[in-house]
Image (cartoon, rainbow, N blue to C red; front, side):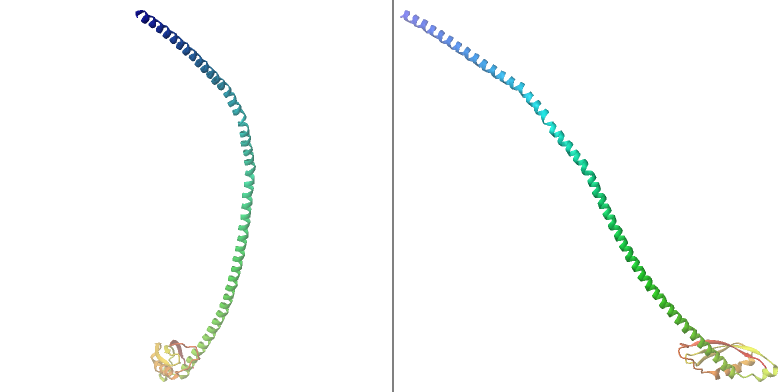
Length: 237
């Protein structure tokens, strides 16, 4: 029995050693394969890195050219558009100025016409006023002439009705008597006063005045009560 056990244990140890060596060899092969794969991947990655910059450089060099051309073209177009805009502005300004000038001319014509009409109306008014003034002056002159005639008729009536006092005749007394009296618009005596004069002539002048009135005035000469003053002369022939 002891022999069998010893032989079995030796055989088991041998088999185990063979199995372990087989596993070790398999693991080494797998690690080598993995290293080869990793190395291949690394090589591929490095190849991609070397080729990529060349492609990027080509893109960077090729694309900016058309962009620069476009910018230049735009600048050229903008330079050409600027004078057109200025010309349009100048044309608009000229049109606006012409319209303003036309409107100013129209306004001046309207003002001129209005001023002419106003002047004509004023001339007509002035002519009418001149005519009215002439008529008024003529009427006043006529009225004054008639009034003067009326006043002279009153003076003549008083002189006719006066009497020279005997005492004054005997003594040879002469003089001037100033009188003031008020008459109505109908020519009636309202009041009478002697302002200056000698006593000898007072009675005769008062009798002459009272006997002279009423004296009817012409129509439209006396519109209300009027005051008159006269100087009556007493002289011996």
